[in-house]
Image (cartoon, rainbow over all chains, first blue to last red; front, top):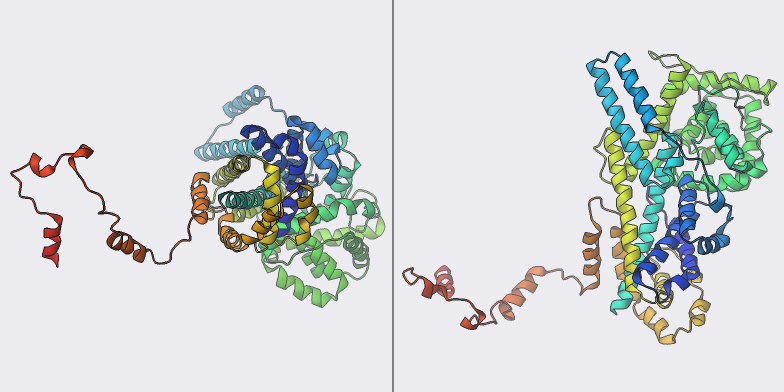
Length: 180
Length: 395
């Protein structure tokens, strides 16, 4: 599924508004500052498309709020409630040492055949990859089960695609303007 | 979008969400339990089962959440099944809940109900359910089969399970809709009947469903079959998209030092070049340009650039589909190429003109001052032939 044009429009509108709000940190500042402000406004615009229904959007807004709380609040005030910033879900804590020790004990007790070893290794690999995915997707640490994780990833990928498309076209237009 | 928040048997999750969120989340959970009651065979009896017609479903509060969720799901899943776009409004949802009441209590055709549940499973529920309840049953059947043959084929295995649960639940609905109900599930042939394993199997199937959607979404992974490989591809894709965003924001920062000046110009051009995005002209309010003290000639120049913009924008559409493996720098050079002189159709003619008419490869003299040495002097013993002599032999 590709991002729809309505999503593109919505993102563009949100981003437009965000850039207006972020203007003080964009005008006459260094390149890195500008880049940071642009990226922040784009991320918040993307996350506000989902209006707080998805885990990743909330986590993204929280991350943005830690960087520049005031402007992010201003941006969200136009779109929806600011309570999103104050929400905090409990992190999924995993005491690795304890888990590893218990697993070792279990493995010793089990008499492992070849098949079991193979499947165990495959499961380990999958677990490692899912952990990697959680690190990449914003708010992945707060998603308690894999089904939710994959669903959020789906939505996140689609939103990222809209973001990239719109930003790309804006950059193209800006470059065309500069050249001519 | 939080469709699978509640997994069967994980009551701690509910507690977590209860503690940290407001009541709207709980209502969301209820709504999802509503729709996916048939997905949780190992459902704990402590968590109340709600039927779509249950009075506990506060339709008014659901309205605020479901439309946005409804908008999401069809967009994500609708295309994959070739369905038309769904525009869910609060009105639809209320009628749906009201009508489903009639359907369940009236003479229910279990088959259409099975189809109904199948649709819910594939999460194209809203449109189909609304439509079904508005029309006759035969029409519904044909429509359903037309639209969702794929889902029906998939779900044939679960038909028995569903029928069982449907009939059980419909009888129970008449008696007590408020109390907790068990979902009766029939295990498939040749598989364990443990409640845990059934729940696990349902979860696994859900995960594999989602992975299939992801396979359609991520380019270039049609051939990858394993979960680990797929996850790898997904991680790489997400990381590359994130890197692209970083790169694009950096580019935008460098391209327009005074972003306010260029933002207006950019957005005016975007409005003018309608083909890519269907932005109405009112999106870029004219007063914005006036307020920024925009000189009028810039506005005109925006229109002067209409044609090249249009050409550029439409040709940037294929670029908007991300090609896996295409790094940001490669894409950058593509963009550069788009903005140089127009690409000629007949390259051969251009080369011939350049080389033979303009003499681009022969207009310079090679002399000693360059620092080179004449090869014929170095090796006087070897018999040399000039290029013209050689080519003359070919004529």
